[in-house]
Amino acid sequence: MGSFSEIFLSFIDEWGYFAVALLMGMENACIPIPSELILGFAGYLVYAGRMDFWGALIYGMIGGVLGSIFAYEVGHRGGRKFVDKYGHYFFIKKSHVDMAQKWFDRYGLSAVFFSRMLPVIRTFISLPAGFARVNFIKFLTLTILGSLPWTALIIGGGMFLGESWEYLLEIGHTASIIFVIICVAVIGFLYYRHKKKKGKVR
Image 1 (spheres, one colour):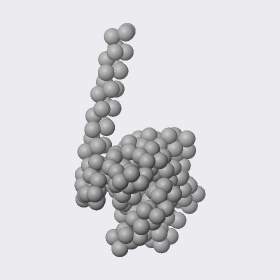
Image 2 (cartoon, rainbow, N blue to C red; image 1 turned 90 degrees about the vertical axis):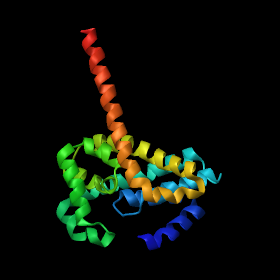
Image 3 (cartoon, helix red, strand yellow; image 1 turned 45 degrees about the horizontal axis):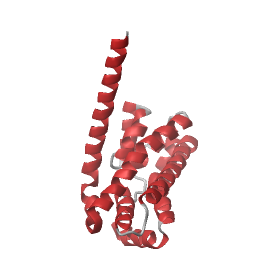
Image 4 (cartoon, rainbow, N blue to C red; image 1 turned 180 degrees about the horizontal axis):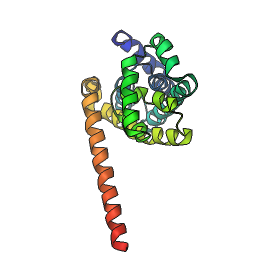
């Protein structure tokens, strides 16, 4: 995929928000295009004054969500046998689907939320959700909630790094894992406070 990077960057450079939406749609439809490349470069263009942060965020989210819906429908209608048989034509590795499946089997619907911020798994988690035919509205809600912070984080990272935005390609995986740990800690803390306050009321 590295040989296509310059083509993707030129596409974003020329077509702007539309290219961000299309490439994020492809990434979330299980075509392995690094979101750090797409969103990181979009962040750089915001830094350079050639894009608006909110525009990049909205179009990145639209593309990502539509791609996730497409992958969900493929899993829902085609099933695992279909993906295993034809997935390699679209650069889908069975090992990556297996990884996402293990996460889904272990954590259920919550995996749809947290995996949106994890390397590799975020690209493929929609497939096992489709295989399991989970409630579409719940799937869509968790997809949006999980994708939003990750999309904003990478665009923001590209803005912060400026001309050194490509550094995101090196640290993106590590940053995503740290980000998930922080999210889990914050959610756990808020849940603990809620339960504690509820206990005092009683």
